[in-house]
Length: 280
Ligand code: SAM
Image: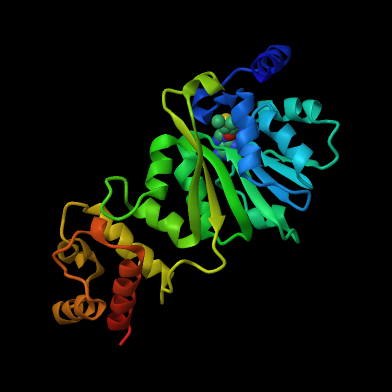
């Protein structure tokens, strides 16, 4: 049903898909329903949708939530969305780049904020990183993303997909996969499989760290040189040899281990010990 509706809208407005903007529009009714159900939306919720496209998911969100604010980069979609969603008084639309926007200006005094999106795949990781690191007061992010990226987010130590993105996401959130989605659920069809994942923001970050910047720097350095031992990979932090040895000893971590074997708690311990050595 939705497939024909989307085709009709595309034809009616003469809309031309822009591949470089990741424009794969979701047309599968069951997947659309699963996203809305998975996001657990109530009439108290303020929803931010990134990349509404022709408004298919937006319409369902508008039916379930208190308000929806959609951020769309492609100016040619703005008049389409304005006309197609004209009946909804709880809808606002912003024609901006989600990577550049200050979400606090949208959120204002809202207290129950949820992000729901079928994200453009070319900017998935930068958008999620921005939302997490800039500390916006959202409750959850329910997003459709490329399968490989979702697997990296949910991955655990010693798994091949475990890396800096797993630790960034799990530092701030619990990650739960809602469902898989095949390419046939979109027009045009992407070349990759997709996954809907829900990230529930924790009240406090998962581990206590003395310096978040240093914590993420230790993680990035450890995974930049994935095959190297931690001892070699973390030399970029430029601690003198004795302090460096002591930090590993105090954190109870063998420097011959590789970053991919460390749990988030171990990364926190190590970065806290490095912090102490750097600041004494
Ligand atoms: N939500 C629609 C759906 O599910 O059918 C469309 C999803 S489509 C995968 C991604 C949407 O994000 C497109 O409408 C695209 O124009 C928009 N987009 C791409 N880059 C963007 C950016 N940096 N900021 C905001 N929107 C963007």
